Length: 111
Image (cartoon, rainbow, N blue to C red; front, side, top):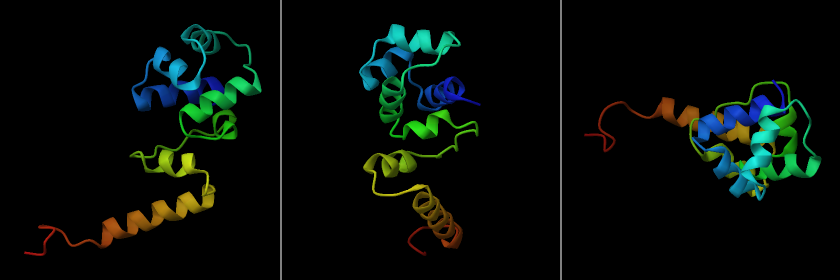
């Protein structure tokens, strides 16, 4: 995967249109369409704007690995704050998975 594929995945996951992404990133929807339909590379400034619209770093969008599926908006919120690095975010997800696994089944009030 690369930039184009990552943006397409994020658009699909977020249920955003190209117009919505353009508005969120501060670029025209025509430019978004051009980026996704042409093999040309966008400028670093454009990549940075698009990444910020999704609450990510530019490096996240240009990685060849598939983007992880956050499952909810937690990861986007954590990344958007900028206080946590990838390892910290993974630790938060591991803790949440632990808590979800340790929670008693059935009624949440313990009845």
